[in-house]
Image 1 (cartoon, one colour):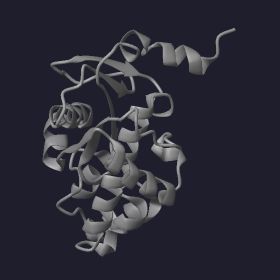
Image 2 (cartoon, one colour):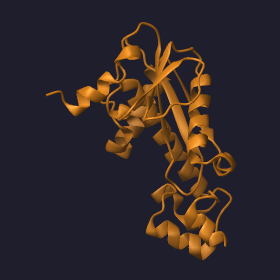
Image 3 (cartoon, helix red, strand yellow):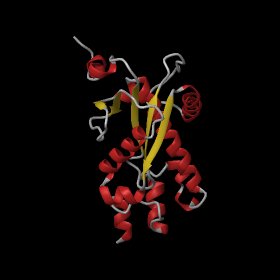
Amino acid sequence: MQSKKSFKAEQALFIWDKPGLLAGVDEAGRGPLMGPVVAAAVILDDLKPIKGLADSKKLTALRRDKLYDEILGKALCFHIAQATVEEIDELNILQATMLAMRRAVEGLRLKPNRVLVDGNRIPTLAVVAQAVVGGDALVPAISAASILAKVWRDRWCQAFHLEYPQYGFATHKGYGTAEHLAALRAHGACPQHRRTFRPVAEVLK
């Protein structure tokens, strides 16, 4: 019987094995209550392999940081983009995520022949693209994109924490933890909170 992993990998074969540049795309920050949603697009260099690429959520912060630097140094090209809190509130989180992904692909220095996107949806692109469920664990270029997006957003949260330390952004990265919800109730919403997300909207009432 065919394994679940191999079945998922085959979803991407019709464009994965074609010649030309392949870009992997992933995002970070759909779930948090604050901050931008971040997307990265990466074209890896077959002549400069990177060991240990995996779903960013399954790596330690230290390992992610090391791989982040290695990806920046070895990838043929990459681009990190975002959709702002204002865009998230105006469009909704799904459409804002698609916008960030499109910006990431369009920002690549080299134009890919095909694009593989983690998940089950793809943004509107001027290049052939396919969604790969679980792609961040299956496709190295998507794994690399997931690491870039995750590390970039985590560092953004750490920097923003310096302006609003009362919320604890450096620790929970904007997710709806008990600490974060308590801070929301105590201090109200800050400029980077997503007004259309229920816990924030309830505080604003």
